[in-house]
Length: 302
Image (cartoon, rainbow, N blue to C red; front, side, top):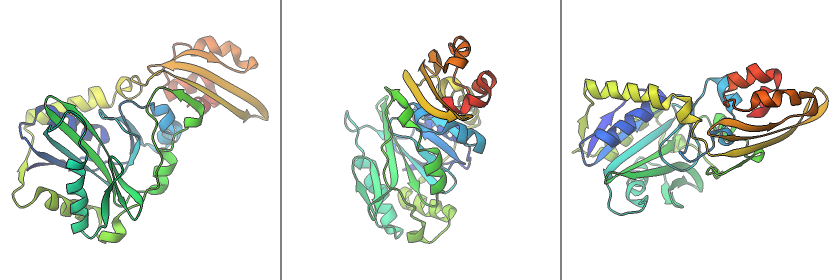
């Protein structure tokens, strides 16, 4: 097995690093462990407006990232360890057990009673500690998953629970599941756990690899031009409609709109604000634009 070391905690850079390995690294069996600073990472077919509390994430400085694989939205921070496996495909469909079972076995060797459950999860004592997703292209499989080791579960619940009740969307919705951390079983800090897990998964014959200067430059370009872009994160959102009733300044109000690719295509506002409807049509759902157009009402749109 070949493994790469990536010390960055930039969620945009790390997503680009993973994509670059999948597209360009020559090795047949690749392992990558990585950690992000606080971020909510959505599946490629999801509506991030429905999955993430966007205004809360913006206020907290938490990144919102769209990954190139399916599945639900997940919260990352420095207490969450992400693993990636890249290998030749062995079947036409998804094959989660091939990649998850070795991870569960490695966790068991570290004193964590983990087991492969459902389609693509790892659980400990009935609570989910890992979810995963896959992409198959060019004869290779990209499999990646989260490992909740010492994650801020309060932030996870606050930021990644979304506002799905207000949305009707064609995007894939996340499926809530009770989650937990694993630290109390292994009794080591997150960095020590990461290194121990790397040793278990790579084995004594693991070969350390590094990207060339040109490869690292390409990763930085991909991070800036793709993963940091509004067009990738929000512009790929499936068409959806939004409807919300709320009390504002003592009045019962309702807002409704339709959007496609993150742009408002139709809007319906309270009668005294109807003059703003035309200004909203064609507006991208960027918090700063909504704030400029709608003032104090902007948070109610997301």
